[in-house]
Length: 575
Image (tube, rainbow, N blue to C red; front, side, top):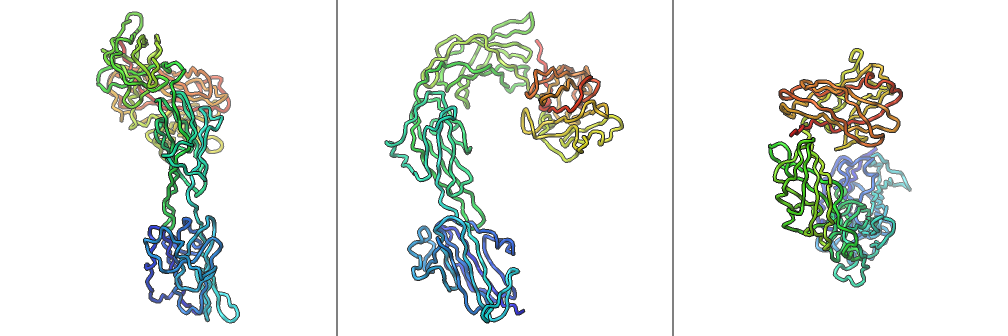
């Protein structure tokens, strides 16, 4: 079979890059080739893939086959041939360059094809030769004395982006307004916009409904809202400050190959969110929380509390607070508040600084009796008494010790978590730590986590055939914990019907070094904390060990599944 050369040059350029003089005659080739910027590795598989391109964009295809007798380009409905006279500056609007003399076929060497309809379409090239040829595994067919070969280019034409959204009430049970795909409101002409009135401190639920043009992302902008911006598909936005606000969304589509450029479209929703004063009382929410004051001294002199609305800046409220500190039966004092102000990054939070530090062994409460603190919608904070302040328990095990199993490995002996080592009773054979399906009885998991994205999963039949499984954290020393009095703590989550009772924990070099550590679970299907005390006479240089033993779980039988996370060593601060 004689190899005539078939050479096709395909230029698929976004509108901003089109240029008709980019094609230069090529010298003869001894093999068939096809050039297209959007198919880097051209082969029989890739040429069958659809080429993405935007609506009202064009593709230029050049046939410089050698020995060709005739050619015919054929396009489908929604596509038009362009005249070769347009320039780069004309590419924004190519309609004036449509070749009205051509229908669905053209015999030109270079075909410029404009796509005016979204969806799948194709451009085909039929070449005739007087000798047999082949191209990308396809052989020419003899037809009425000439050899005919057809090459098909499939295009996937993306429509223009048309953003669409909805807004619902706080409970997300009723739609209050919408932006339809066929709407594009003028953000400066709001007389026809629908007003949605809500009280300060309330929220609305927004949802991106955009599908036209196949967007793959979005950026919301919420005037007066929290958050102010978001890329979430659906979210709740709260409004605390009085005023009238607009909402906009930018639908986005990422670049695909060299033929489809990134695109975006911004629209304003035809709504006005009107925030009026709340009829709800302005109150404290939950407990106070101690904060790290970033000093080397024991304890902390800083804590905060949160309220149910945005705070107006204030001064002079320190004397309106009473902070009571109790430790055992011999210490009971009120600490002076030396500073009270709105948190700089969270306008629903009040930060208090005390004259002296509070310890994590203290019982602390805060009371407020004043009229200085107000919300941005002019509500006075309701007085409160004896609200508990949560102690500051800093984990001295740093990320370098992998206390939350976040750092993975690919080693079953390490339970696939960096810095851990599994010892198996009855000879230390890892086979005795596997279930019948081959899975490890103890292994790193991303199914559950109390913090981060990973935890340690125990999944085994009790009693254990090996008698016990012992998991050591061999890199606890990386955290540089000095001599002192501490608590060993970790979070536990028991799956339904799990009755596992306790671990035997070991802190090598600690006093006591080993101790039974009962779960005392408040229930299943919830995270809770387990802890026990120990002391160090010198720096922690050895291992922290979790022992899963039959002896600590007498009477526990059947499949037991639970998770451990967030191993902590916490300083015990005593008065």
